[in-house]
Image 1: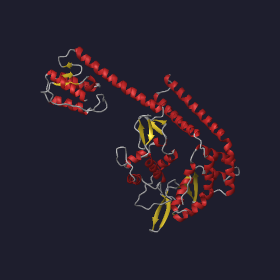
Image 2: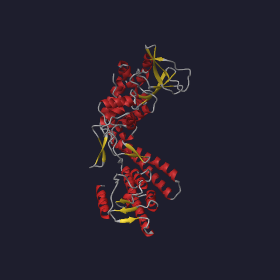
Image 3: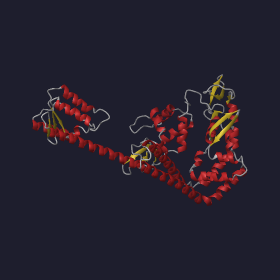
Image 4: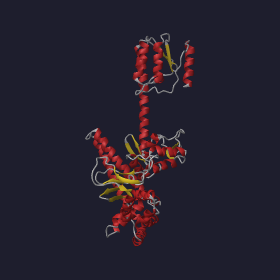
Amino acid sequence: MDAQEKLGHEYALRKGLSIVKTWKVSESAWNNKKERVAFNQMIDYAKTHSDIEHIIFDITDRMTRNDFDKLKIIELIQYGQKTIHFSRSNKIYNKDSSPDDLFMLDIEVAVAKKMSNDISRKTKMGMQEKAEQGIYPSISPLGYKNTTATRQHEINHDQAPFIKKAFDLMASGHYSLQMVSEILQKEGFRTNRSSVVNKSTLSYLLGNPFYYGIFIWKGQTYQGNHEPLISKDLFDRTQAVLNGKFHPSKNKKVFPFNNLAVCGTCGCKILGERKKKLYNYYHCTFSKGRHNGIGYIREERLAEMFKEPVKRITINEDLAAWLKEGLAQGRKNTLQTQENRLSSLKTQQGKVSSRLSRLFDLRLDKEIDEEAFKAKENELKTQAVEIKTQIDAAGAMNPNFYEDGVKTLELCKLLYSEYHAANYEGKAQILKRIASNFTLSDATLYPIYRKPFSFFAEGLSRSNWLPLLDDFRNWLFLLPNQSSTLTCSK
């Protein structure tokens, strides 16, 4: 812009013109969606100052690259008695210009517009290609950084621990967005511009699937090739809390068994309430209307009721020993299991790819309309991303599956005693680890167990453990580092 301004002043000096006002701004000359502020200021200034007879631009595409603004210039020439100069090409246009000259101006604007469109199209194509390659074609979110050398999104090790902590705190169900935001601010978490991470920024951050390995671009889902910061399980648990109606407050009593169970009659949450400033009771929220059945349950009583689901998946020494032996024998079949799963997933991947190819053929032959094509294309691409995720997971088999399995079995031997010895907060943490939800019906709790506890619950209710042993072993093969997620705190 400095060079353009200098050339404009030199041109004015050669033509004997005196410059009274200059506009020098970084504003695109191609803008058909919103007003060009500086350009319109210049137009208005020229209209209201009849003594100004000349306007100097650098070249045509610095004046405009769209027809709407070109008409404003033509109006200044024809009705405002203005003369338009281009300092670099030495071209001049005024009301006395020939039709051929004005026609050439139209052509120059059209050429500038065409070049702008080409640049835009090539940029979009390049960004789409990056997305297809698994590279998010935009600025890295907090916790990552754009690396010029590799053109990848690499982990920002200064911010990443705060991101992980934010997900962990929110997934626990004991913190609101405001509370998590305040905790991170106190610990020094800042954006790339050194601003504090407020509630709205945190909400956007916690809803971004980029952190577990995928991204959404132009309405479609892609498997990213960047390193995830969190697991999909942690992301899903965080979304469950964010989408719920539970809003913890540091100024209110925290009820440890909140959000663990739902009413078997209406499906509403079972939440705690303080009575007579002495006792904690839990009951249905009756959000869908009051009903008979579940009454008020003392916290002590509810803690006792939760013992049965914990006891149901606590295994004895003999069963633990037998399962350990089964895991040891399963080491021999590890590679075959992995190969079979990879083969199955690749078969599914091939089918999805073939369906996509046939879908494109249908569209080219105009046998399917655009709306149906887009809907089906998005569905198939989402399936392809999910299968690719599973293939990556299957390829990254847990090398410590046996050790992790032994730790899990040792934990399951101690679950009931751990629960019995823990305080209410500790009991709640154990319950959240073993089950995604409980249904309270007729004074009985029915759990939906998480893996691997669902294997033990089913196995202990049947005589043949062998099929479930295989499921447990495969789970250990394909989900590395599970032992870290199975720790219970007293």
